Length: 329
Ligand SMILES: C[S@@+](CC[C@H](N)C(=O)[O-])C[C@H]1O[C@@H](n2cnc3c(N)ncnc32)[C@H](O)[C@@H]1O
Image 1: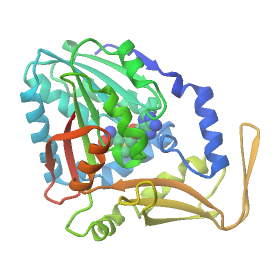
Image 2: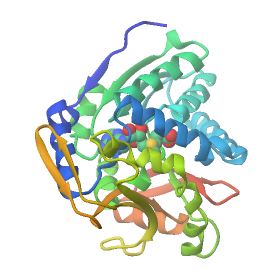
Image 3: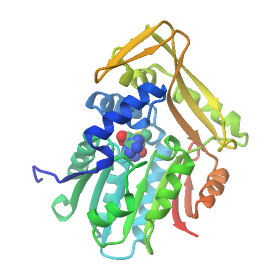
Image 4: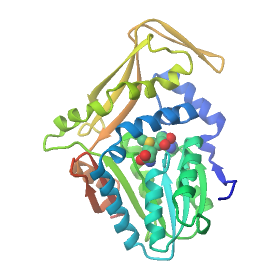
C-alpha cells in the first residue's frame, strides 16, 4: 500500500470557515452536525456509537440487504471503471463493501472518500486498502468538504475523472434538511450516473409509533456522550446540562418526523472559544442533533419534489433501514 494519500480540502471546510461555523453554533445554540465528527475524539466516539447501535453493524439482515444491493448495483454497472464518490463516507465501511463488489466484477475503482472529518477520510482510506483484493489496481483519494456549502458540481469537475459516477450517500439523509440537500444531490447526476443512498426508516404501519420504537437507538448513554462532546471540549460538563430526546415535526417539512436531541443548561454556564465568551442561562436550550425518519412512501414523495426518482429499492425485514438507487426524472 502507498504510504501517502492525496487529500483535497475544499474552501467550504478551510480552518477559517470551520471556525466561523463553530462560533455561529455557539452563538445560535444550534449544533451543525459536522462538529459531531470532526475531531479525532469525536470520530472515535461516533465509531463506538455506530458499532453498538447502527443496524448496518448489528443486524445480520441489514448487512445482507447491503450485500445484495451492492451485488445488484455492481452487476448492472456498465463500463470497465467506476468513479465511486462516497459523500459523507465516515469510516467508509459501506463504500468499501460496494467497491469490493465492483472489484469482483473486474471494475477498476477510483474511490473519492469525501467527508467533513479528516480522521474519518483517513480511516476510510485505510479500510479500502486493507479490504480490496488488489488495492494497487485502484485509486483512492480524499476530499474534505462541507457538503452543505461546497460548490459540488464545479469541484467534481475538477477532482473526478471522466468515468461515470456512482455517488453514495449512506447514513446522511437523516441529518440534513431535505430542501438543502436534495437539490444539491440532484445537480450532481449526469447522464448514466447513479446515486445510491440509504435512509433510516420508521418501521411498521403507524409512522409516529414506528419512530417512537427506534428512540432507544438514540436515547442511551454512549450517544449522549458523543453528542455532548463538542460542548464538553469547550468546558460544558455533564453536570452542567441535561440531554433529552423527543420527536419533532416542523415546517416546511411538517409531514416528516425527526428524532431531536436538545441540551438544557441546568445552571448558568460561560464558555470561551477563540477569545469570544458565550453565556448560557439556566433553562436555555441548545439543539444538538436531529435525525429524520422516513417511510419508503414519504421518501419517494420528498425525492420527487427535487426531481429524483427511485429506480430500485431494498428495505430490511425490520423495516428500519432502506437502500434506494436513484436517477433523475
Ligand atoms: C451518520 S455518519 C454516516 C457515515 C457513513 N456514511 C455511514 O453510513 O456509516 C455522517 C457522516 O457525515 C459526515 N458529515 C456530517 N456533516 C457533514 C457535512 N456538512 N459535510 C461533509 N460531511 C459531513 C460526518 O463527518 C460523518 O462521517
